[in-house]
Image 1 (cartoon, rainbow, N blue to C red):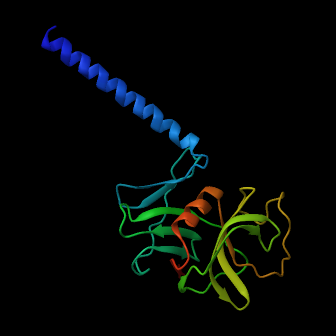
Image 2: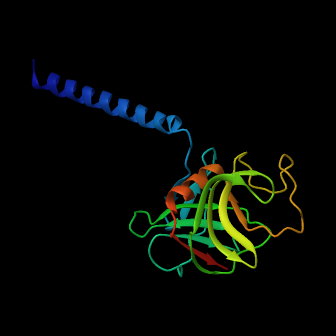
Image 3: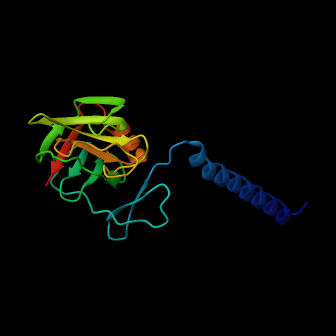
Length: 195
């Protein structure tokens, strides 16, 4: 057997192993149960997020630069975006996604996660999960959550109608994003609210 045959055989074997590993990795996300949004960085350094079933990658605004140090959840009242920031990781923005606020917004400032509940019922009567509370102001509790039915809008026709005079501080995300935030933000995690 000549050296060319050995090299060809080794090359074909390596390609077969790489193909098998790629096939297994491709199916791993399907077996994981919950698809997680991917965060990438554009050529300009801007984080982008792809929704689990999105066909195009929307551009996500970069997190504000004045949000402090250490691992933190950053919430923008004006853009209704959440960023999960961990300076010890690469990229530093672990995830970024848009959310739907309640009827009242929290005052900009620095807070900490003080309570977490796996499941419950929101003030709008919807079943929610991954509730991460970080502030109370004027009798309103502020926290992140996801609706179990997967909707984020309080005007969705299949959801109960909340009292229009009720002050609600629930900040809703999709279920996959709610899972990301739940995993990222244990009790005492810093939450920075910016204007």
